[in-house]
Image 1 (tube, rainbow, N blue to C red):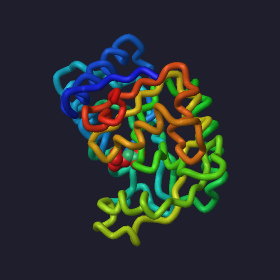
Image 2: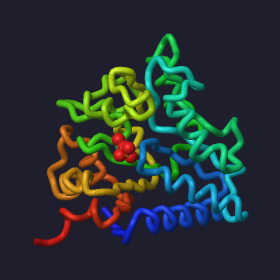
Image 3: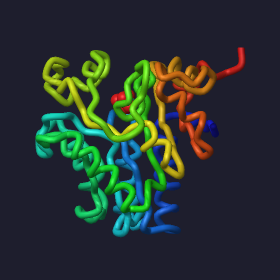
Amino acid sequence: MKITVFDNERVLARTLAVQIAASLGQRPATVLGLATGRTPIRLYHELGTLHAHGQADFSRATTFNLDEFAGVERDHPGSYRVFMQEHLFSRVNLPPENVHFLDGAVADPEAECERYETAIAAAGGIDLQILGIGTNGHIGFNEPARALEPRTHLVTLKASTRRSNAGLFHGDPEQVPSQALSMGMATILHARRIVLIATGKSKARCVERMVKGPIDTRMPASFLQLHRDVELALDRAAAAALRPE
Ligand code: PGA
């Protein structure tokens, strides 16, 4: 795993945004896998700023988001679709027909998950997957478990994950849906390149376990050790536990 430690979140976000804009310049029809959560917000705003300055063109890009809450309509204020609209899609020139999302409100989640896998394959696979990491080591909504699902699937969220998403639901973890649809571990690991962003001291321990620990389904992010092109973009606080003693 390539590990890059940045002085602070601002420099991290700016540097990654410039890199993504440059790869869109070289390969305009890039397929991006996108993450939600607090971590990538600065990156998305930096991409919006670059676009406003004519330095990032999304006109031929395609996106697939990692996950969505089950039972939530696409225009619900707590949906990840609305989150992405606010933080990225409204700020850049992505054609709406190139934006792909899991529909959490469908009657048949299994068919929806299959549709998503087929759409990713039809787009030629994901070129660059952006990831965050949960403090419990989850990526997407692949929660620690005895076994992990390879493909896009319906998941039951851990209490800690519902708590950390409460901000989208009036601060009340009870209002956070108990289930979600998420890309699976193989869906994520088939991306050609993966950049995982982790910032803040609350992530230091899971970053350490992801990098140094055994590959373990109880630390889903540890499976990234198997991928040949993963970069961890960390701020100093998230990298703190990696320093030699
Ligand atoms: P966060 O979430 O960016 O809000 O810390 C990360 C995640 O759960 O994947």
